[in-house]
Image (cartoon, rainbow, N blue to C red):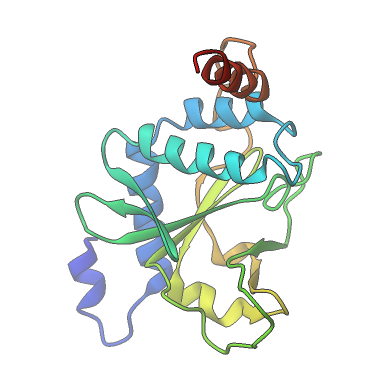
Length: 202
């Protein structure tokens, strides 16, 4: 079934669209490399000082490991653009959001979608992407915005989503990837070395 076939129906089947798009991502993404990077980073960048670095690294890796299918645009409400379809993708990561540390399915996955300045409540997620990709320590899934929208709420400082497991279309699950042997150096050390190189070169 093609995207055009799905769109020809009176009632758009967003679940079928997401299933197909998950296959698209699965086919282009080197998920072994991505899962290895997630494993390599571990919890080292979860602190407030480094969490934005972690987001940048994983977002760029998603594009870099996609065989040229996605480009990182780092825009408001969208992190990637599909170079073939032109669709926009927002990427979110939560370590145990999809599966627990023991491999148990999380029935309702929580992700923060936006941060806002101030406390003025809004009713609609601004500038939504076409698809939302959710990655965790051991899995990756996605859904179309229209599937996500009913599960989005505004809570004080931004929009959050609690997504039922059945809404998500999985790119890969626990056990469907291999962690590759890699260099053991860590990002914090590499960043500190780069800072000192800049300092000492001035």
